[in-house]
Image 1 (cartoon, helix red, strand yellow):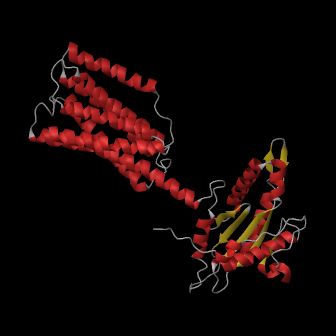
Image 2: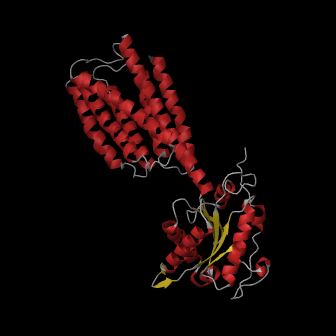
Length: 416
């Protein structure tokens, strides 16, 4: 049994530097889990040092360490699901009454059964809180579903062991320590319970790591400022629809958008207002776009919308809806409202199109929309012969931007 205790303590202690490294990356709950793992490993190491006897201070210290470790774990899981950590006063409010009861049943009326009922009862309530926190905060945990389910199963299993221990002792079916009377059954049950604790910390490690990976993936796939798809993610999605070797139906439309007078807005109201304008546009667009649409930010004030299974008529209807919605929703800035508008170029897929092909045609249509006065749409069929002149200027003296990246737009494959 001593070997099992030592192995369990080492397994838990190994997670401490992992949590501390995650804490250095500012992951919520990592530092609290490190403290919980430290307390839990100390608890098991003390238990491995020898069996507690009557009137032994360890009879009070060991259960309190176990409960403190459980409370810190609950606090860590609360942080993972975006809830506030438990306050120090909360820890004190739980531990002090329990310490008083344990001391009374150790130094005044020596009763192993009473101590067990108190400690396992309190532990059951705390672990039940962990299960409840994980279930209620399932979405907020922001980690792979498998990791969240694994944490719930581990916590539920530990809860079942604590509850079974409390019920059997309270009912008088088991009134002695697994360690004092090491029968094969007691040793088996105790070993399983001790091995569950490292598994609980493993589930916490996976949950925090899973949250880290999820956030990294989101940072690659989403534009940090607006929440729209990043250029990389948008081009990867578009590539599946505009593959030159595609043999199936390719009824797809693409909208190229540019916020009107964005440079003037930045110069007049400041870059913070400019950032708010970009976010405002994405918010409005997300409300009116069909569910099948993909909205991506290609850079600066340039956006693109991919409309799978959509004709030119559908693309025009979506564009008109977006134009109207943005006109009717000016950006609020202090005591004034800042009108916003967007110009849209529309292109539909042709046989053998690549991503750069359709982007180039949509860009040319966008150029014509801006040259004709902005706050309007233009389809590729309406583009005049002078649309390809990349050095012309718009009305207002703004030079036409070269979008050289369109020529080489292709899916960005992850490096190995």
